[in-house]
Image 1 (cartoon, rainbow, N blue to C red):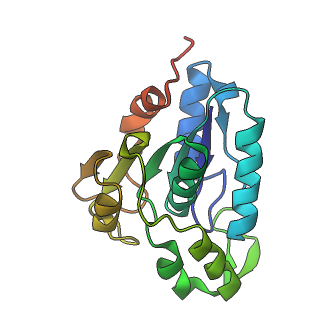
Image 2 (cartoon, rainbow, N blue to C red):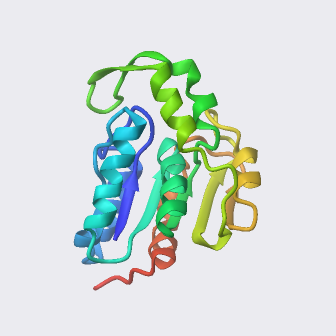
Image 3 (tube, rainbow, N blue to C red):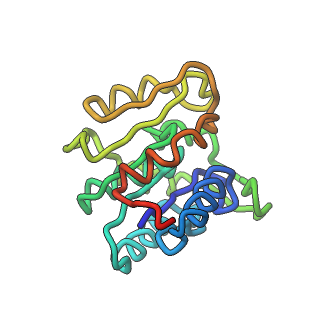
Length: 191
């Protein structure tokens, strides 16, 4: 099972979630893909994902983009899971502090209030250092305009790292790595 965790102000309708979902459907793996709409409150998002992890009848690999990568790291450490991190937020409490206030989901248009209390919830799940680098697959592009990719390289030192020059925060080469993600998760196509 791959549980895809979208980023801040995003949704299951995100481009990467859609690409991975369609790829898995084409390979007869639709039942092994889950991408919940994450609440904007970090504690509520973690609680929702934990329920999905516990409900899964097959081993779970998390795939997290941006803030979803931050969540995936904490959950991977808590539940001894594999995690694919795509341009992950490494210091989410710091990088999202500028977003305190009224925000809007980029896909649904739903407005929400992001507060200092939410920053505190992010601080509460910060992982100072990963314990098993082999459980992570890091994918970054140096042209990420939102996050400094070097923070991720340092945080996930020892993990398998895919680094591309250029690109942007969306990780433009994502379609090139769909089979690598499935292989890392230990999922084989049924077709």
